[in-house]
Image (cartoon, rainbow, N blue to C red):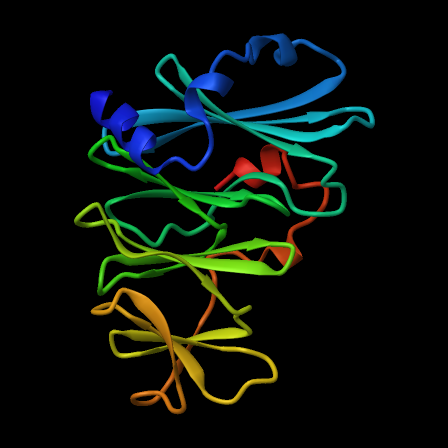
Length: 234
């Protein structure tokens, strides 16, 4: 488990130690809350995912938790009615090396990668897609029309492109090993430059473009599925 804790300390974007003191057991037999809990496995390692939502109206829309041994990584959504929130598992996993879990939120979405070697990576943004050839995962963080991109090499456990501000992507495309996105109302494309570790504007793409979609379209997420068991079922 040492690898797991090390990875969280390096990559997590929320405060781990401060929120680990919450007692999740108090919610399980409380009629005022609906608790969904499932174990997931990556390699020989088992983690537990939890979504907890109030049965009645509350300031807290959703409490999500990842339990690793006796450690708890807890995230909150407050006043997020009408927006997707909570942990979501994918019906089809794109990685052979691990399992991806998405944390939907109108303000602080995240992508979690549970690797088969026991490490857990947390990246900012829940709009994500995987380049299985290049072993990179692209994560877009969206908060009130403020967008950021992070590219992470999950094979070599390193950040390929550090978190950088970007324009709002209208659509993503691939061309060989290169990835581009278009922006509504603008000509040309923005490309992800792996050598310069940045995003640059270009008038034309280098080669034919193939559309790329995010791992999950949260605009199609049912309100009843958010922060519940349905979201955790594969």
